[in-house]
Image (cartoon, rainbow, N blue to C red; front, side):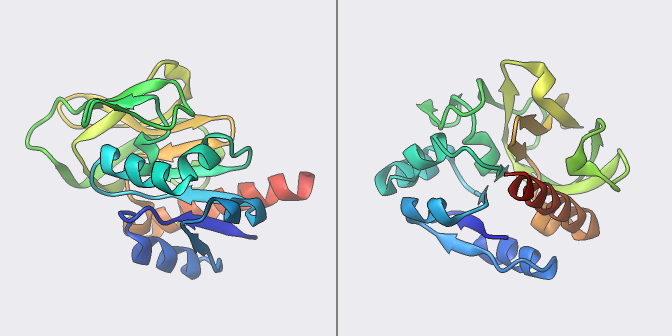
Length: 202
């Protein structure tokens, strides 16, 4: 299983690589668009601001490559926000893979930081993880999808927000599974298992 982890300069790469190694994956960290041709799946991590991340993705050519990537894709935190059309954080465009916009959270203080319960619906990403399990968050914004049916999990900070989305094989999680203990590792394992099924079916 060849999983490409995108390096756009602000992706908390050490944590996500360590988490993947713990579940038996030796990921390929890359900042080169051509590397996606050899990947079975892509993980787009991110911390910081969407505008800075988009600028780096555009400069490297990865923005275009990711927008046309047909395989399984997991966006984490800012990586999830980048999947959408735009963000209020910087007022700029994102990848436009999933229709919708990123909005500031209603709750205070910001950033919303720490463990928070995640309520999820039945989805393979959460197999074996009870609804209400806490995950670790660090963010001030969250996406508001144009189609509410893509939301597969929610959490709350001054009101409910999308904690996970699925649009086909494009998945985003607003929390950090790589920093969420056993539940986070289980979620990453579920993603990898689904990627293997897609690869075997191809």
